[in-house]
Image (tube, rainbow, N blue to C red):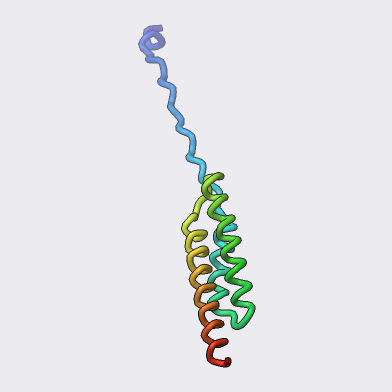
Length: 101
């Protein structure tokens, strides 16, 4: 009986919940991949890829901002690369047109 009276009550363990990871923004990654393809694909395909990369990356940035997703940098990089590729292609087309006229 003496041992039972001396037992201390057990402390409850505090369990901290695991942090929930944010979902990955796949649209931004796809926009980045398309923008890199716009640098590799020749001709009109490059203009189509650059335009698609700008649109898809803009959607990726919007989703990352409003839905709190990971990897927003890929969407921003895809947008920047797409814009630069489109500008380079348009300048190249205008120079080619001026040279052939």
